[in-house]
Length: 340
Image 1 (cartoon, rainbow, N blue to C red):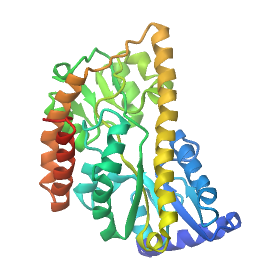
Image 2 (image 1 turned 135 degrees about the vertical axis):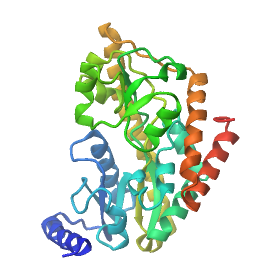
Image 3 (image 1 turned 60 degrees about the horizontal axis):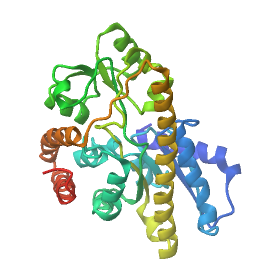
């Protein structure tokens, strides 16, 4: 049985299993997320989905399923185009294998120093149109962007700026993140998340690209790496909310606008909620007296962004779409004084 047939079979079984949960809305849609059930990200995104029936006056209802409920995390785009799913809430970088443009727009490492900078680019700086230029050929329509926010940086030693990255033994995933840190002079290695704590504890690495501050704190990372950088300066994923384009085109303008507005609203709710968790963890870390929280200056963040831009160029060379993303992105950053 080929992959698509397996997927259709699984989807059919899931539809029967979930049939009892159908709403009375005019249009019932099934979306899949890229986070597991129970995680803070998924619960916030599910709140968005659950609000849609009321916001649209019963015209549309959305059920958000956790990652791998119907298909694998990197198969949702094909599943939406095939009508197996109606939409997704997912990290756009999962589709970089189809076109490197998806990876570049999903996480241009170093580009953003705050979620609002990315939201401004998406909502008013051409990012939304750019996403649709990438997605429409695959049968999807971009509704809006969410993000868990900037990841913090975990370190056993003080890293007060770009110069302190030179020679730093650190964990970073392969691809853009690893390439940017290499360009900054660090010595990154690819380790699975399960080995980060032990590697820090044993001194195999001195620092790590890992997760947001509150997650790092809850997993004890600061016990072995007491010099975290917060707010982060490097990685912030774009989590797209997209829908089957034919379904989107069947909606009236009012409903489309309600959906767009709802994503903007919940994107801020998610960012603020997770930021509150982070801030509480930061305050607890500082009060404990054993952790030194470092905040890079705007000048150091700008230096890192300039280095990152050299790696964006290498991605831009891999496809015409990636080049277009690079041109639009860097044009926006220059116009807004974020890069020279």
